[in-house]
Structure formats: C-alpha cells, structure tokens
Amino acid sequence: MLEKEKEAKLFIGNVIKLLGCGPAAADVFFVSGPEIRRLNRLYRGRDKITNVLSFEAPKNFPRPEVKGKAKYLGEIYLNPGYIKKHGESQKALLTHGLLHLLGFDHETENDRIKMQKLENKISSALGY
Image 1 (cartoon, rainbow, N blue to C red):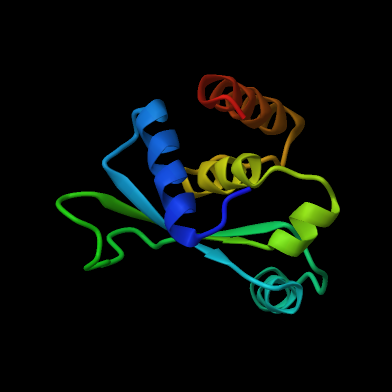
Image 2: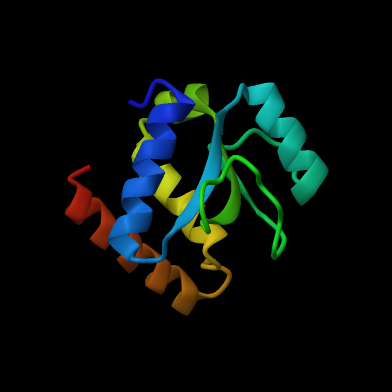
C-alpha cells in the first residue's frame, strides 16, 4: 500500500523507465470517495465512486515543476478507501492510470487485451 503521493510518483517513474517512454512525469493524488465521485460526475458524466481516474494533459501543457525536457502526461487520482475495501492493488491501478495517460484504452476487446497484457508485463517486472 502506497502511503503518500510522493511514493506513488516514484513508482510511476519506475513504470515510465521500464516502458522506455521517458523522460515523462505525472501527478498523483489520493482522494476521498466523495471527491472522486465529484470528478467522475464532472468529467466523465458518471455519478459514482470509482477506484482510479486519469486525465491526460493537453499537448504541450506547461508544467514548471517538471525538470528538464520531461513531458507532462497528466494526473492520476486514486481512492484508497475504495481500493482497500475491494482488495485491489494501488500499484496495479497506478499502472492502469498511467497507461491511459500514455494513450492506451480498453474500449474494444482488442484494446482491452493489449492493455491487460502490458499491465501484466509491468506487474511481473516490478514484482507486485
């Protein structure tokens, strides 16, 4: 269980290195059930609590905190209470959110299979 956003960002950095898609960075936030529900309703039109949301940054989005020429990918929001209640893995959900920021989705069966295979590869490589 990751305790802080800083630990989560370090984990994201390891996934980015593993994928060879850096230099890149993303923000990670731990939020409550009501807050993730609000975000889900506001940006996705779904009025329900969920485990993870990710929001891809627009192209060339300026992010002064990102050092050097790292590309800013966007934001990942985790709901630790929901994740714990459902016995899910924060690391797996961070990976899932990051893959969305990198352009992967699971709208079609082919896309879902491709994304799941990559998630499994990352999980095996990083041991979670």
